[in-house]
Image (cartoon, rainbow, N blue to C red; front, side):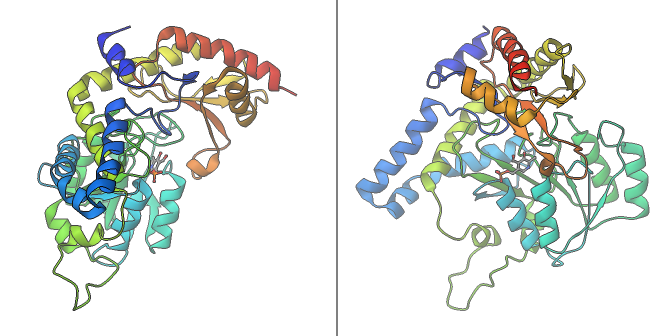
Length: 378
Ligand SMILES: Cc1ncc(COP(=O)(O)O)c(C=O)c1O
């Protein structure tokens, strides 16, 4: 096991079984768990609002780390409860109220629902057969018919294809189109430092922070133009747009924990983390290539730790996921078409190992998958 993998494993509680589900929710470290618990303890000792004030520096450091990882050094970063909440806040405050939006057909289903709820007219950009952005065609399309904003999800929930984020960011800059990036599956897994106009993400996935926290990073010029849904009443104190977006009750302890988690990520070295995650994806796909009843969706060398298995010959992803958990304590994801309703044609099984997963673990998964497929076939 590499030093990085050993450090990652030693930093958190022993796992009960085999955890191959970081794209849903990673395992938090002792340091993150302790920071979260310590903040709650402090709230009880000195009062919740005094404790929150005392945590200002830690929270600021967390926000600054987000801005750095997103390549948006000047960005204002607002804490949210997750990625979907971040998108909801953003679109609900969009300067013109709503407008036209271009995204990929593989867009995350709940995001499409939020876009629709805010009255955005969504159109899909051209893709190759595997759902990857067809950049030249997209450039033509965006130039001919510019939308009010481009929304890109560099890694979706339903497959590990990594979209050409940096090229898209450059294209949007050239065409002067605002680029909004859903980095829920990307931050901590692929390089997001492309300087988009907006980047939002979740704490609990590749950054291994607590649940119930997310972030919305916005370039200051755009932040100033956002119009938070709740108007500022005359009696209210003057608040910045970012403060208004973040207004309301929050689990400050979880935000403190997230700030520690992102600090740990920076300390591990984002490039090293990304390289190992991509390597793990490659190992998994190679081992899984010949398993009867399943087709590996991604290219072997796709630089992502997500591996998706599409059933062939009647394998049942939901039953297999349940069997693996019940019989072998192996945690995987069942993903139905709602994850990407314009692209997925049927449910899939997904694995998403984090740094301390070994080749032996992945071999054990392959063996268990074969048994699960046989046991659940009708
Ligand atoms: C690509 C993508 N976007 C958005 C989300 C929503 O994130 P959250 O549950 O933090 O709102 C997810 C969650 O799985 C996701 O995979």
